[in-house]
Amino acid sequence: MDQANNLVIDADAHVIENDHTWDFLEPSEAKYRPRKVSDPDHPDRQFWEVDGRRGPPALSVEGGDDPDERAQESDRRIGTPRASRLMEDVGARLAHMDSLGIDIQVLHNTLFLYDMTNDPDAEAALTRSWNKWLGETWKMSDGRLPWSCLIPTRMLDEAKIQMRSAKENGAVAVCMRPLEGERLVTDPYFYPLLEEAERLDMSIAVHIANGNAANVELYGSVPATHPASGFGIFRVPTVTACAFLVLGDISKRFPKLRWGFIEASAQWIPWIHSEAIRRMQRAGRALPENIFEASNVFVTCQVDEDIPWILKYAGENCLMIGTDYGHNDTSADLDAMGLLRAREDISAVAKEKILSHNPKTLFGLDLAA
Image (cartoon, rainbow, N blue to C red; front, side):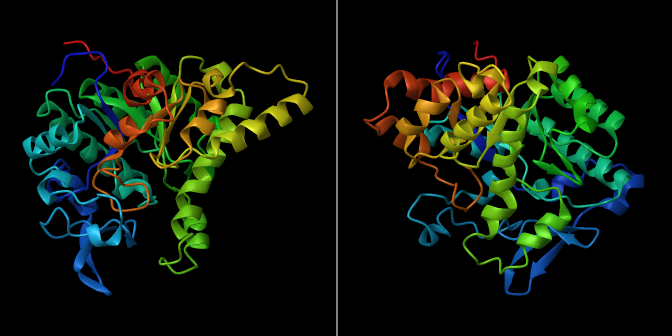
């Protein structure tokens, strides 16, 4: 791995859970082990199921071995080797990163993009097993695969215990969905977790997800094939969470806490900027020089967006980029880093900040030798 400070950091990469993920459950917790179910419409695809709830429909547990198996579905390169995306072979994952010109990938989960169970004990057992799996993965990666830990949000004391253990085993962020059950991620109920994250120097990773079953069911009432289905379930709540953050007082309560809004693209930044300025002025509040920096907000962009326009509102210290490695949706692009470097409408300084400086800052990464 290159020892320079400007390492290329993929701020949005995934692991696809496999059977080994749940091998860290205690014997008494075996009853909580997720089971695989087949998709009736696609018998060759399997999904995890917990308490009768099936995982995100677009993200199957397993597919074929051909890394280009779904290339025909997109004009972007999105196919990944099975052993790599399921983290069955960490060496293969690192080798693939090398071929893509990526030094570090920050890993996020796949299954828990939904709220998979109402049982607090089951949730705690599953997040603990998942975190131990990622800790094992990190130890085999020579520090190149830091990760965002899961927490049982129904058991705050247990969540803090898992955060501390995860921090010791390579976690750099705490995954929190924009909607967690009946609460927004900015709800005061979560303040003890935010306080602990700040103390541990861990960021909050608000990856697109939805932990409110009723909201998922509402948007899921349209066919999953509808182009806007995932947009409503995942992206809209993420953008709303950012608006609540920048217009609230959390940054004053937790001034050192950093927030990453992951995989929701970034062209909404000018909209949130405009809304925030108007609402702050109407409330007679002092306007910060940069509303996103004032709240320690970082946002992943997509390489085909109008990044110069976004930079006018976000500034150079906000944007990051990711490949969405392992997934095959509208955010996935394995060539994102190289395509960003090739753009001629973005300054070299802005490119370096997007590729290295900003994700390094958000995730508190130590890029020393």
